[in-house]
Length: 124
Image (cartoon, rainbow, N blue to C red; front, top):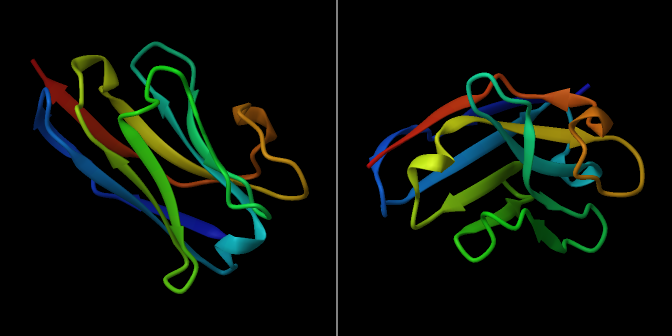
């Protein structure tokens, strides 16, 4: 089974940028529908962005559209989330997930594998 490890989180001022990485091992990331989710304290895990396994097409949550970019480097077996124009409300633990089978999803329950998460804190 695939293992996922996120990195790149940290503390940044509002308006700043961060790039998160999700490195896969034990499996090929290109074989999964993969996505980013985030969870703020006391709240449920929510969809941020995903990449379709076959088409490579990206899909974003409305509140990050135009600011975040998801990408995948198959040679490095790694997925990325470039986050620009960060806002305090983007503060959360960010998780990458991998989903077996056909069809992409925005539902956390549909994902089969998760990383441990990386904290992103945006100060005002």
